[in-house]
Length: 316
Ligand code: ASP
Image 1 (cartoon, rainbow, N blue to C red):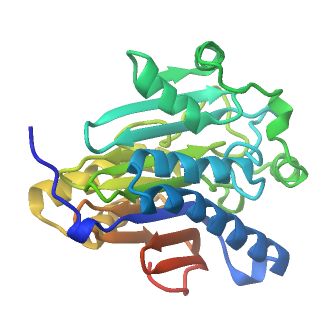
Image 2 (image 1 turned 30 degrees about the horizontal axis):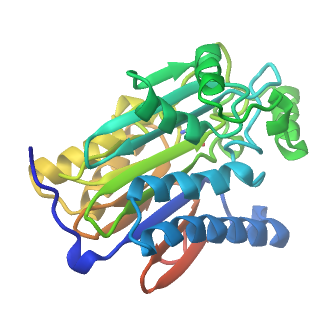
């Protein structure tokens, strides 16, 4: 057993994302810009309350993601993209860096909070990944709130599906592609955790599964390295094992968080993919890295809270 590196002076950190993609000033209305920043701030506030009180990174990432799932501006929970057949199939995962315990769900249709369900899979089942009807059945058995599938629908997302179909576009057209939410945190005890949640990609078919529910692809947490949550073109994140690869580089090559994240995102790009990641380490490093035009993102520390949307704001 390795002892986790203690965070410096018991500092805590929380980093969140609300999706990466073709997010540019010219295509974002002032109202949308405001709503997204407010949503990110609310999510940071929810997680930061827990961390500032000495709570666990695991609880903080879950709390932050629940806020983003409930916010229709993000592609997770309410506001999730539509599948090709006009429904919603939700994916989420959570991982505890202290124990490397993990839980995940794919294709959930009636569970209001997929991230809560992922946590229940981790803590109350002997499994790591549950799918579709089975995942919702398990949620019911755990008393997790159930909703009709159209609870997740919003007019904006329906229009994106209609546009995609009327223009005969593929599910991989950039504008409609990303929006996964996620959080990574370091708590005052030196432990890290990660948690993404998503509706996946507009127009996805045939039970397609992205990177978000796959431990090692869209999420990973290991106190010996870092915690990572990704957003982007899931197929490439799976092929590059993005989240685990970032942690492995840090653990085995001694890369810092930014170097490791940039290197793995460069690999994604070289393969033809696009997206971004957020990273936090037990030593208190944080990093964003993305190769898309923008990424909804935010950080909270003892020193304060900041949110950003476009590529030219703050660090990337
Ligand atoms: N990575 C997600 C997926 O491929 C999409 C996203 O980040 O919005 O399902």
